[in-house]
Length: 394
Length: 85
Image 1 (tube, chains in turn red, orange):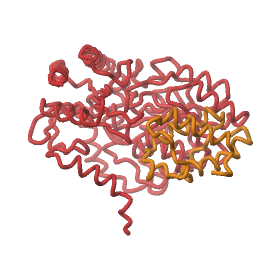
Image 2: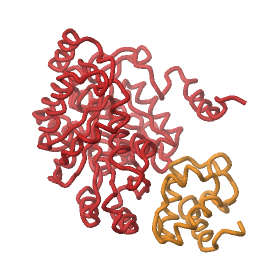
Image 3: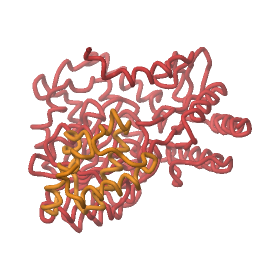
Image 4: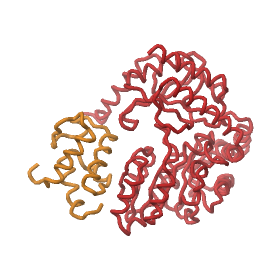
């Protein structure tokens, strides 16, 4: 008997995938040449499996900001802001974020995962309730596990199902925090946000919206689906990440409630961890400016989105969401065909994401393409051509 | 199985038939993960189906302490009596 016995099944699954020369999970990327090109297995490929939605990882201004901060402030903060000192730029980034939404309060976390972990576990206590969409990201479920609130799950994107659960709470619904996402990254679908808001208001509950994948992509200033639908001020808390459109690593929570500041005093994933490095903070501040004023980037991204979605529909592929977005999830009939598509695309010079159960909803086998404003029309054509050849060969 | 409320037992059985028809007749004493082979997403789907049939909310904390459908039936019995989660 060993502590490692419990990993036998997952280790076998991983070994099966690793038998291939290039594994489709944790695929080694040997080199990165630009926001959309890298080398995998000795071959130059189009990167269509990253979350670099606006292509800012290689933006010269963003890179220069990081380089300047690195030289001026060093490689790390070496500790928590609470215990070891709070750098001026960390606080400045929080002011930038709060200003973007026109809200009074923002908190920066060291990762997007910790932003959900810290916000959700701390906002709700043992006498409160959490209502989570069933397709929520692991960081949301883990936030519930770290906290002490009673947690109930409602059916994905189903306001009526949420309504029934809030109704059962009666007056206690006023101490309930609902958590939904702006864009669900597995299927690429969006929530019926206006209907969720109506249900929330009917019961006097609170709403946290995770805009990890939608920030930068939707809305006039790229603030996400809440801005796009004109309902920002109906949301209580918005959580996001620096590691997608903002091209760094870290996360944030912003709120129209100034009392978010109190969360800083009690959130363990905020207090008991090192704050982000100065270079990451500087790069994120510059990237945030580019997102807020980045309509040209968004226009290019949406041209790419419509081109790919249109072509995949024409080729007869089943997509995870009818609504176009930066994530195109192609639903394949089984694991073998998903694997065949993944390798077929790689052979054609396209790196995508393979998503298989139990990571996927409803046991689906998915191939996921993440688009970027930095993808050129020629690169989108090559991705479409690769799918076309795979479809012909099937 | 004898001390489980028949209405709860029936609701679970119906929920399995709807949510996981491929399982056929499910053994209420089988471990949902190691014996039946369900993953966390399948278990969550099943629980939401049971919730709708019994008009209760089952806290996810209950699931962490539940291995079999019989154990789940016993744990949710008080929720049915309260009429609320």
